[in-house]
Image (cartoon, rainbow, N blue to C red; front, side, top):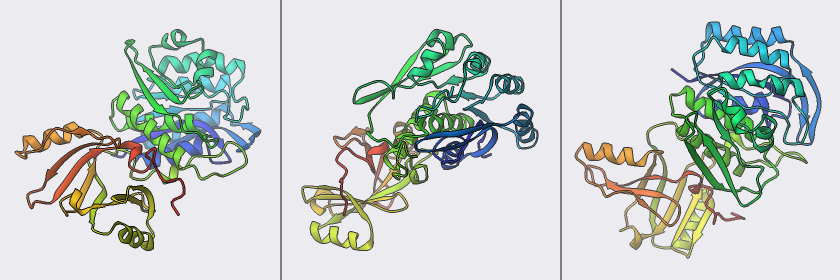
Length: 378
């Protein structure tokens, strides 16, 4: 069954955060999004101009309507609106036995306040039923720190985007106290509106699909990073991310054929040929290798024929490369251990029964957004 995610959050008329970002994220990750809107906001990339709270009984009515008919596999809570809404939402959610992701939204990216002191004080009830709470640094401080959040038994994803430095470190602290840190290079952009909403919804979708919390967080961070890379540059302020352009970059299970490398005997001629077809060059290395991107998200590379024995190579990406290798070995196929390459991919080469060259690999954002991606592809 498709993962069913109930989102309890406010609406963002600019489409960058809130319910709109949540729906985009859940949909792009293969889930079915259902909503209980807590507030209607008039906002754009410059800020929040007006907020109209939805009456508490209407919020509850939206929740019970979808729960009674469609069912739910996970819940994501974002902007909640008021202390009264917090308690009414908690009354309903306490009857469920599904993962709950609580993103304690207090301040918008633009700086607009979205939760008053009474609402923040009431957040304790939601932290008490959440599977994971996803505060940024200011939100974690406002909630009383890690110890206060963990009182209810939830895991914490302490997001590090507000910390200075070129590396963003997100700390996942499990309920038992064990930790895992996800560190990635900072993506410099002002178009980061909705990162928190997007990450929480991505985690909820992963949990709804049966992923472990670690796997759901890892996939969610990867989704956010690609969406940041793909930000369309809209608005004069903190613009929206590019959810719609995250296509073949998110692990939805199994393996995905999304990259092929073809032999080239004349590098310049091959580059010109594929540019003429309309593919966008994103990597060009020393006249021996180039990679192109299609509008659909697949990539195609050319490499000097003598480097790859003159044979095309089909690349199949998987989030769990070691498991894929183990399955092939268990079925009697011979292949070497995966190798971490200098270009950021981890690969295992194999041939199929007909002798076709294949590469099982994992690359994350390095497939389309390596640090050496061409800045001006035209």
